[in-house]
Length: 294
Image (cartoon, rainbow, N blue to C red; front, side):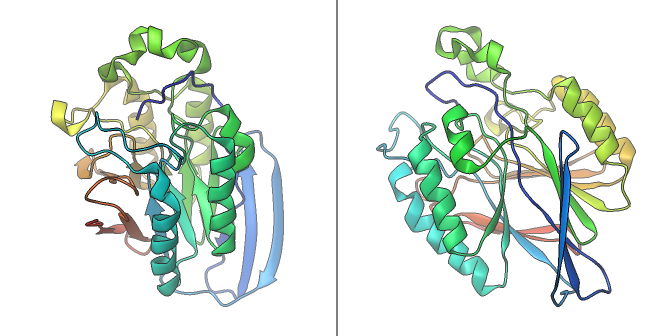
């Protein structure tokens, strides 16, 4: 959702793991948007059915709940619920988690650092998507240095995109036309679209993770946004994308559009739904929602 400060573009970077089918070697391999590669290998048993976790809109912070929202988030309680859901995931031998953005509530660098410390301490490998609340001061604390990247896990490729507004349009966000929520729907720039075309040239099945959905909010119709037409055409024609996940709207919904499944998730710290997360089965791309009730 909207951050109460100017928002600058920053980039996202993360390392990935590639499980080699039929092998007992785990190859850690990643490629960033600027083309840099690294790779290491270690011996490890490969499991047939791999599951990963999914959380969104943690909104970690020191602030009290925003009472202006119908279902406010509780920033101060982020630690309690991150520990809770990560523990539940670890009990199911899930070690990799996609976080679809807004890790912080007010782009607090110290809070971002605490989130990463907790994540590492619990043995979670978190694939982070840039959210519109995650400003430039959070980038260093979160270890994010690239806009967009991919992460290979066995025969699945997870592609992370940044569809938040560009910095020049956000310089005076709260005094601009973009402060109208109906306009705060993001877009994917041309550089990413060209990179996406190349990254989809793979024999792997693909999950796309982004912060802002390609549809309007449910309460205004849930319509496909024309600004994402080229993105939709690219992923549809590739024949590789099985699932697109996002956050931002603080709502749960799922729909199929031109043969591709799109899903969104409630925030981790939202009132009446604290502790919400999901499990994605990489064998069939089914999603099991675990909706909190606190």
